Length: 187
Image (cartoon, rainbow, N blue to C red; front, top):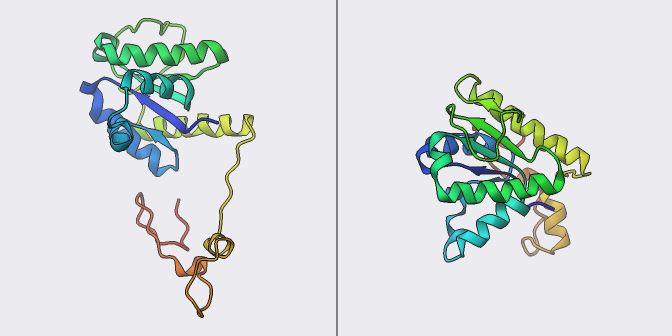
């Protein structure tokens, strides 16, 4: 099973767009590969090998930020080739191109459907990615269950000695996206 819902491939010059989209996608509950989120994990690794694995094997989709900068960079070309290998093997729409300008990128044909960052709101882009991931999950039988803290703590025999067991209602959390506290409807 893939580690990430979406891996974002982008040129350094396009980092502000990548960062904003990554942040929005995370607040929608997706597991996003965005290099800034993975600094400790990337530290010391052979990035040529590791990034190839991320873009070829470890995500459900690759969000490719297509731009003139993207077309010219060695690292983005490496990521693109890994993603294309995956798309070819699976024969499905693994690469989700997001055009930032009118640049042509090798291997991304004009016949491939894309979204245009200049014409579509960030909210619509994020919602489209979320929809793709949810469709992937349904097609592959991937479901997520809410797990109560009291069940986890009881199973692991974690809790205060002699006191009552810890319950879900004891936990206070805040949603980073909207600021709602646990127990409130979040979105």
